[in-house]
View 1 (cartoon, rainbow, N blue to C red):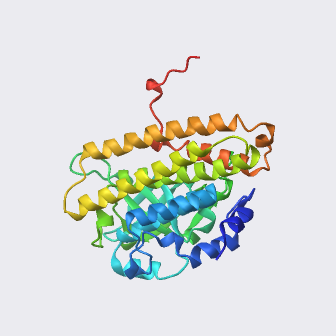
View 2 (tube, helix red, strand yellow; view 1 turned 90 degrees about the horizontal axis):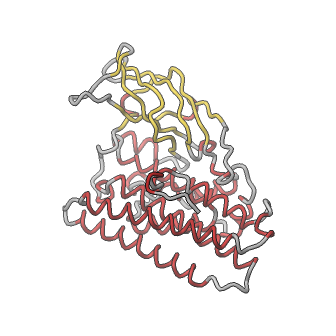
Length: 343
């Protein structure tokens, strides 16, 4: 088991998560926090998993982001047939990951096979994945299949890494070790057993019924808060004379609120009630406003740290770049129509 200090040392300036850190991840089953215990996972409750992801992001941005996205993909263990889930997830190093975009096609060959072709961007953890997950348009004889409402049918597939070509094209200023690469699939035949639909579950657990929007919102928020906590820790090393206590207290307050929301969501679902659209919107708006305020405060603090904070080899610079790279995620980005760019 590696300490926080050892993980940070391993990943400082690293272009990829090291083998030593990956071994730690597998030993601690951090990729399996959402995988049911019957499949060899940790089967964490919502609050417990979110608190774990906060700690991972606080340790290192790339570390937390990769675990959030890949553990989130391993959540799909709940969406695939039990015999396939058992086959895949009883292996200690199983790691799903991929893209949420629709980047290709799945040509229906017969009632149980599809031919996959296409390319997908932003597959976090790509160098470490054992299986790639992807969304594809279903076609037959080269033509898109439509549902009863005239919409194209989209299905998700699981492809073993041997059949994917990884394109190491991540050039962003931060999250450099996250391995967020593109990948292509060419003429790969897949059995229908290795496909799934997001809202179809083969397990029976409260976690299955959490709306995906809430799951995405809260897992991302704990990452931003975790990186913010690490940022202020590094800022204090550079300017110990500045009192950053209120920032730290704010991070703690909002983490507590996120965990409280997670508990409330599970309680509502545990009572066999639905999460209203209004409550989902309220949670999302809270996230939008929190990320805006957090980003503003981190930028304000950064400008107080002086020239030492611009050293590209410094810890604070890496955390700063990681945070603002992660903050570019579209999930909480407000509409530009609502912003005033005058000064």
